[in-house]
Figure 1: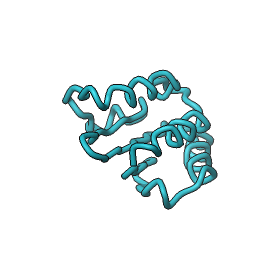
Figure 2: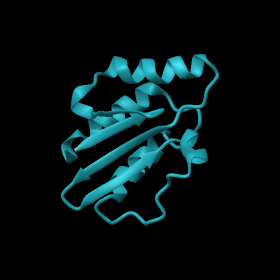
Figure 3: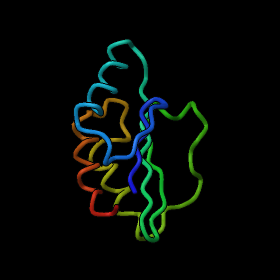
Length: 103
């Protein structure tokens, strides 16, 4: 299961499209707001949440270390620039397509 939360709008990945993701992020940025995006992945031994920098003020951060099977997803998140405040909606979309195989 892959679930995405953008500024408290929560959806299962299979219920949204790329345009929904793009518009949620761009519209909030246009209004001058920081955008919190969380991606939840649950499959087999993988149970993790990844978040963008805009989520730091909400206090919902995981303190647990990633398991070996989760590290490739965390590394890909980093590699795609999703820990930077200026991440692109396109990078998030590419990441979600990459992790579809885990759902």
